[in-house]
Length: 388
Image (cartoon, rainbow, N blue to C red; front, side, top):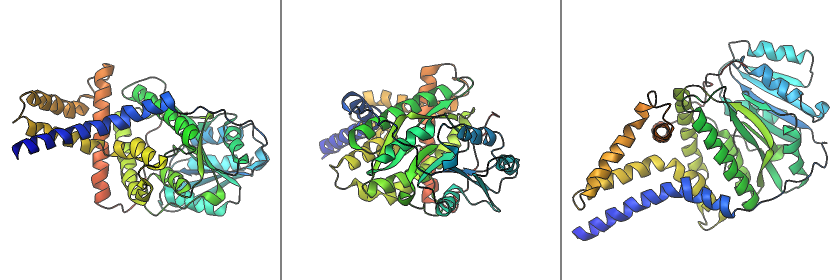
């Protein structure tokens, strides 16, 4: 009996480690090495009517640059409508948008008198506009001249229902966790490109910018975070193609402080578990590409805090069978404490990487318990932005 307990502890520890390796190493490496490569289609036409949808709350530092980046597009402006939902902004956001409206009648501002949350705003705007293609984007994500043209070119194929842009994180300098976040989004972009090329779907669009056919937009449930993931997985559930275009480039500013990114990750975590319950049916049949990618790319990543804790608990129990596990337990305990070291190790890149990894998993864990406690509102506070 004692031997069976020991074997069980070893097996569970191995499964926890394997789960972490699968989502952070094995799956990305396999896709990069053997995933398909495809050429993006040529630009055939630009005849679609486009509705650009933005939910904004107190975005006076970025909203003018955002709107101007859309107006500077090489896509015909007479086929672009810009819809901004101002979520009871109290700064100069509404004033700045109104000043643009005077010169550009294709800009539409809808002011919400009380805080409503992003999901309600984009649902409302999507239901009102009549454009064929919707582009959902954040206020701090700036278009390049040909972003819209590259996104739209895929819709000449009727199977394509959604197209994701390539988001590049920017910052004036790589302070604290900014350099790590840039590397992370670079890897995410590569994974999504390979998923798109290999299977014809991407497990979750980056909410900063993506295009979708209006008829394929599924309204986001009330009090839902991670609206981008919900909309994407709804398309996949309905057998639609979700593609990634690495030439449809947009730029997003990074928060300066690790604390800002920590709060953002907590919100993301809440949405992760909401979406896990909403789309659990996609895990069956388990041998399907969607199930494999969903589990490997997302779910195991969301469960990593529990895998780390599970491996630690098993290591504690295994001390009674193998003295080497006492050293492993000390190492793991130190690693769990590394988030508190971020302010003092920001110039020591390897240590900062480990500390940031454990800090983000702590945010995931906090988000899980907030989700269990019940989500009563999806109203958000934007991360602190530098003025552009």
